[in-house]
Image (cartoon, rainbow, N blue to C red; front, side):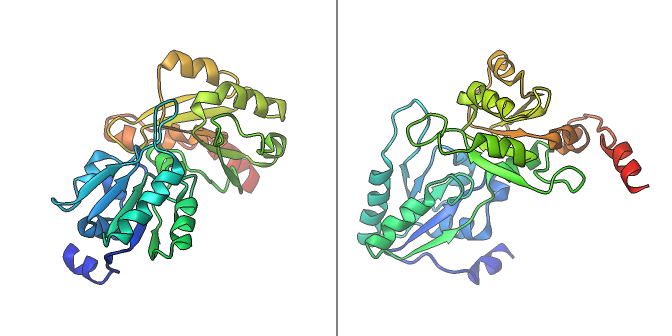
Length: 280
């Protein structure tokens, strides 16, 4: 059945590159196109955040090249990675560039695709489930809920130099976005929390950190914006992590479906009473 479904999908041709999102970690969240690419690729250039179980789906004779980037550790330069994709494709290889999450959501997929365009290398973009949505879903936290928010902001916690980005208008985001989802923000959470509180967010606003989202190692820390820096330090948790700020975090008590599978008793909707008054 699965072979029949894959047979109707595009084929990874020699001399071309697929920029593929592997999702947040759980292999079951791979798309069918991602699986087909894994089965057909001669060379797989993968990030640090791609789960090892996903790589096991590759052809047995496929070659793997690690191109991971982890904060504070030696890693390949982005230009070198992009040029390597060009080199492999020009040698006639079927190249799969496998990136954690979605390649176009803080994944530098756009930079790599532009390099391929510059060198006339054919490519395909295969979106993946970004951790800022799928990772939070595995923690029982919806990024939107019609009784809580009608907007959500996704942002990165550091820029290319590794510091909190100056280009982010923290005041505008703090005042205008009821839910904020942050990638690569754990290291700078003290400054980010201070920025948001200075912009008018309450120190008691709920915050959650989801580490190693969707994997067997997933851990979730719930705290508040004011207590976030000390809570993270005390927890000993480390990246990769997705950070979410907003009232949607309170829904985890009701929607932690993974916890329920392990025996956690889920609570009634914490917003039910207020919602009933509004609609009465």
